[in-house]
Amino acid sequence: MTRLLFVCLGNICRSPAAEGVARAMAEARGLSVEIDSAGTGGWHAGEAPDPRMREAALRRGYDLSSLRARQVRRADFADFDHVLAMDEDNLAALQRARPADARAELSLMLSHAPHLPEREVPDPYYGGPQGFDHVLDLLEAAVAGLLDRVEAQGR
Image (cartoon, rainbow, N blue to C red; front, side, top):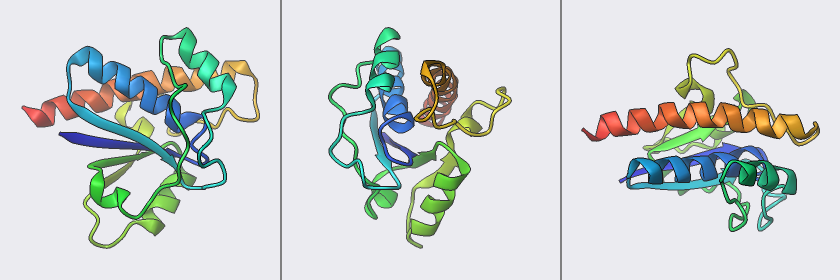
């Protein structure tokens, strides 16, 4: 079974949204995939995703209400096959924290949607509601590409 970990800064907007999108898309494809999310920072640990993200996700059929924020752990680099960062800053933080013997492959989330002009999933926290919808648009495209890769590797 492939294991995916989505990572942003606080694990309350982008990465839980990616987790919700990936769970729904993997289920729709009949894929057996373990999916989780975390933040490089721990100040939101135990909190539910941002209400604005929960609302935007729910409008698209993704229920994030059961998710709770947590910080990336050293064990994540051994437990997951792919650790996907939402932006360059979080990718750099993951690269610094990655143990030398880690098996997880680190990548930017949007590297799985090369047709998009963006390289990073922007943090919608300080913006308006349209930012949350834009994040979901990006994540849907990237998760589709990622799951295509997972399916191809499983063949």
